[in-house]
Image (cartoon, rainbow, N blue to C red):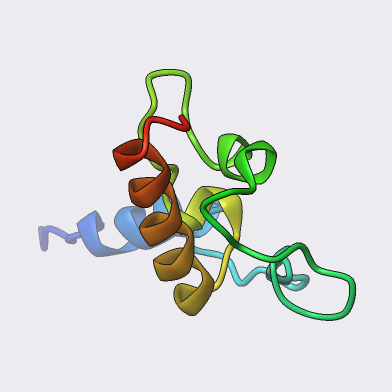
Length: 89
């Protein structure tokens, strides 16, 4: 005559089925393409490099997409803004 609550069991089993909640064995982060040896210099005159980090609409792409470090992202955004101001882009 006792009623059992199986709600907790069901929710736990549902969560374990999802791959989002499982530990990822092989996590790795891409290295910044603008740091290290033989990396291109971030400069407002280097338009070819700057266009790689712009979207089709002319917006600056975020670092989570381009995998650029924070320091280089700041330099990149500053040089893109300078190039825009001088009408190079």
